[in-house]
Length: 159
Image (cartoon, rainbow, N blue to C red; front, side):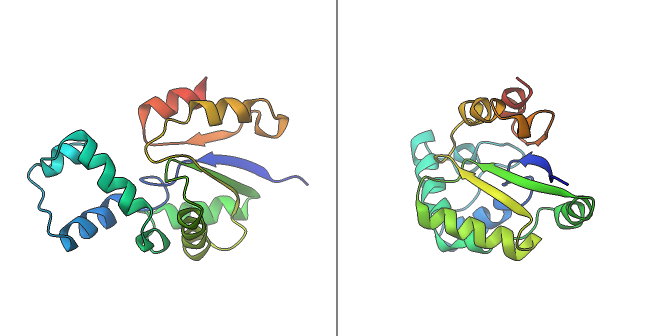
């Protein structure tokens, strides 16, 4: 029997990137100045370019190997795995190969080795429309579930 596939984002869906990022920022002397918004630059009072640069540095740091599961993702993934689902992760982490290895290591440690059959790492903050469009050409991805937390990428998956 062929595995059933679920395509999924990682940060904010599987792993708690945001909590770790705020701890990392605090460890580097940065203080949040605003709460309740998505944009990291606004949260810390930075120009957009500086916020993006700090995210890239964080995403390429050793922290990527040790993020905790996001909410109840571990139990949800385990139940789906038991029912024959396997996961393919598409994440806008970084193009850095060591960051990708740390992400794979983290996913294996949190969810179990073999749960994630594929890991696609796009550039930091990249949209996923091209990566998803490429997958649409393969029969094995027809009618897959797509789990994502960013509205623009949800639309790209639906398209």
